[in-house]
Length: 245
Image (cartoon, rainbow, N blue to C red):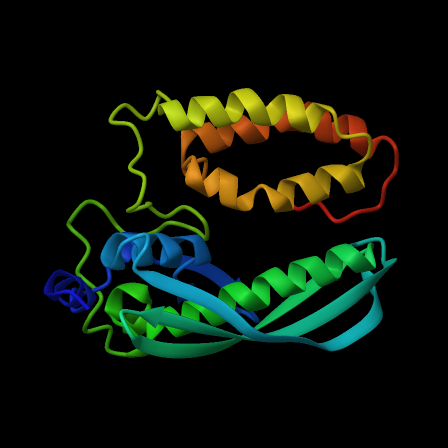
């Protein structure tokens, strides 16, 4: 591992990269999966680290009621083990994922992706503070202090990307964002039903990240706005699928 990488791993976690969510009445701080990958690319280099899913298995699959209307659906849980290799150093992380959907296949898909993401984050976390290790210390000694006038109050998903900086003018798109929006909306328009739309949306996660069309950017907000009439049209077909967007 290079001296530059080791230096970066010793730096405190920037609070603007900490996302938040509420679970069981408690507020939890965490780093998101896409951010952990972006940090690994930034610190180690795009071709200098590897992530391998060495085990993934379904541990629960049960019918359940979903939504306010109590519709019939499924709850699925997976556990995964992911191996991270950086310059001969090997670490592993174990994670869990849960999927709830009216469609059994989509419930499995959500649970698998969540389990892999959770395990990958836990494997990367062992390398240093920037990957979220700092959040496990109750003293938060290795979480950097937030500059005055810029409180870390972002919700889940609205965190900065170190891999693809946003344009200097937040009202403008980068070339990558422009290209993605130009291609994505026509493809979504061709979806014949909501099930196909859900499959397209979940499968596009990596492409959205690569183009930096992520939550907190104007490109993402405009993408969601552009997808709204498409979603509304497909929803009228009464496909009872949980909304992923």
